[in-house]
Length: 176
Ligand code: HEM
Image (cartoon, rainbow, N blue to C red; front, side, top):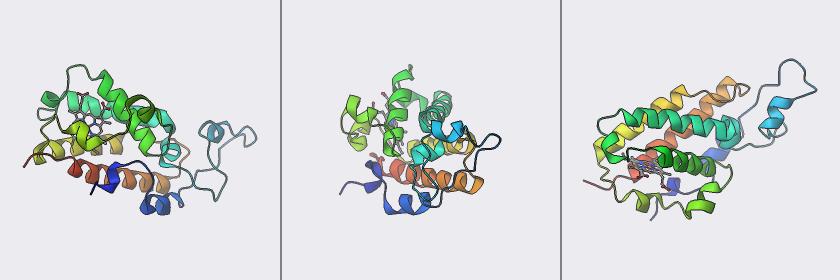
């Protein structure tokens, strides 16, 4: 059976945590409300996606940039990737924004994600998975989310991301 966490769509746990996500009221001029409108924030009580909560494309692009900067200097990971990381950066950010409820550009341009199949050409054992996860953990803990997202909501979203990356990276191991 295909690991559920690799496929797009929100699971029950996502929904439960996201129903608790709150956005701080805009400071200053409440009437303009430009900050929340920019992110398409829902009305109070409505649910928002992780994509919206974290900060949209800008957040996922920054997350992936930080991650690949670590990859480029990592002795275990760098040899697996092409020298030019432009396309992996773009595709990974597009995949993540789609997975977490944003625009489906990844599948429009690349087709079904099939991440296990797409990773078959790369020998991924426990050391590669651990190095990958360590780099992504650092990125998740470092890259700021949208500043108007309440502290406890930021923690909830980070927990979702950490859990997903842990499970998905384990599911991509393809070498003993
Ligand atoms: C949560 C786990 C992971 C996710 C969500 C993920 C996601 C992706 C995505 C979306 C791509 C681009 C695929 C495409 O071109 O359409 C990619 C490429 C790649 N990933 Fe992962 N990946 C994960 C784990 C890993 C792990 C554990 C490794 C091994 C250390 C790895 C190594 C690679 C490599 C080498 C590429 C190819 C770069 C290229 O030649 O373009 N990934 N990954």
